Image 1 (cartoon, rainbow, N blue to C red):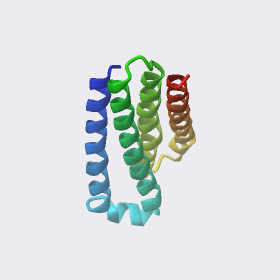
Image 2: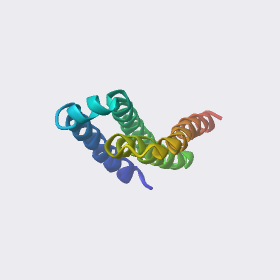
Image 3: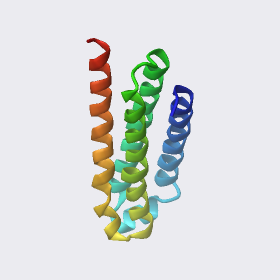
Image 4: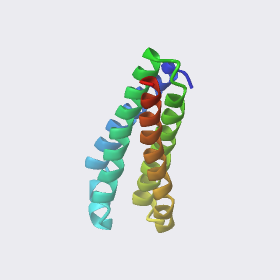
Length: 127
């Protein structure tokens, strides 16, 4: 993944976070209230937004510092985390298939690894 694709994916995933947030707040609200999943859906949207911005930041950093190859791995972890963490929660809320909640932590691990790789990459720059 190069800087341009990181930035493009950040823009796409940021737009999707707005769309999913608005969809949940309006079209899905009755279902989410009825099933008691409004907080779960909001958590999915929140983490989706946070990590869209994190991916944007990593893309900017990588554009300015292409020698920091670890930033590419950070971007992949953030992307995978958004898909697995937020995606599994979105699907859980819509389908009520509870086993989807069991894979959500794998997305959380992706987020953690993304932040760790960001830290490691920046630390290497200052050596």
